[in-house]
Image 1: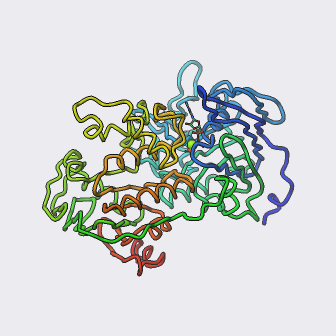
Image 2 (image 1 turned 90 degrees about the vertical axis):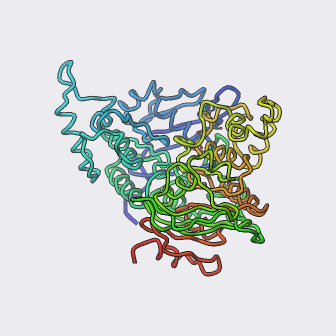
Image 3 (image 1 turned 120 degrees about the horizontal axis):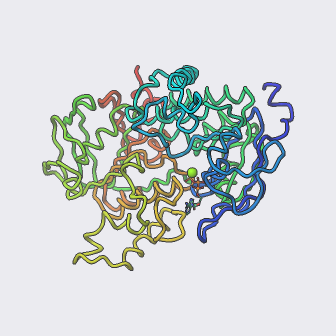
Length: 502
Ligand SMILES: Nc1ncnc2c1ncn2[C@@H]1O[C@H](COP(=O)(O)OP(=O)(O)OP(=O)(O)O)[C@@H](O)[C@H]1O
Ligand SMILES: [Mg+2]
């Protein structure tokens, strides 16, 4: 262990004491306490809706606290707005990526502090400095590219680059890896460690324990808007952190139910689409959960989008309930009993300005409004059912989905499709961004769905989830099926081996 960690750390750079914040009647933060030390990474952990992102927004001046105190270098401060936060050296990479697609990478990096030459923007300097930062980050894209052409992961890098344009004393990463591949996440951690070693205080928010244990020096646990524990990571186990987060131990992370397999519900034969996937065949039966494992880029999402009619296959066929069907668009897919919970909830999942009730009933209008009139009462009863089944943290069925925490938005998307009572549910990374307790709730709900005689196709990059919940596992690599393993024969080793070049 390095001397820097063993020494009692210096005074905290930034502290929060008894900070409070409510929205309408809802208390997002009741009693938030936090100390951030120079040269250390502090992990902020807590369930979905515990108040983590709200705290971040207070630290960077997006929200003003209702009470409590913030200090920087021992002096009480009020962060007026994000610009002011930057001047104070507090930089943030937000959970929801905010990049302007129609600006170049360099313009995005310097969006709020463009270098000036008198009254004019110093374009050349801006470009040079952007190129320099990108070089430091070891990335290969040009500062002249339009941000709209970047992948989600690259957009995150642009946000990080933005945080590096001014000297960062405090850097906050709010679930930065949810959209990143393993490699990209490793790159990000390399950058984070470098900043930490240079004396920056980092706050790191993640639901992934491996990452917390690999990156963080300390932890703070939040529950229901209050800090309930903190300490050093060394000597602390995940069990202990989970108990603090959830208030109990989570015994059954993968509550898979016994099912009996029935008729075949979906069969895919030799399905191909150029550049995406090639010659894919599989089937799923009533009661069955088929896991699809692969690395990011293996073609899993592209396959799901094609099954759901979002894209057209070049060749191959699909059968539903033993009969050949043609699925030209999502409406066809829904008519044949398919549902698809996409990976990207912001783009394709929920309608953010609408209430939970409206989102859950939207895909469900046929049964709620048989004569074209939608009963409010039925709508809110349905929403309430799902709020309790999935433990959605909300003030009620009328709350706008856009005001929910990230993980709770994801639960609404799952509810929205389950409420439609499909026969085959296709889930793409269903528990991304979801806390441990809620993961178990999502698994319990989908397993019960399969037990009722339906089928689940679950795409996931999380090996324990795939091994824990699947009856059979289809492994894809570079657009092709590399293995189809039965639950009894699948192990972490043979699944990973099939997914990686061997
Ligand atoms: N603008 C807002 N209006 C109303 N309620 C809000 C608003 N922003 C946050 N909340 C509520 O405050 C609570 C805390 O949300 P927050 O986003 O801080 O959670 P989180 O800990 O970041 O969760 P996650 O892990 O899901 O990202 C939630 O119940 C959320 O619904
Ligand atoms: Mg959050």
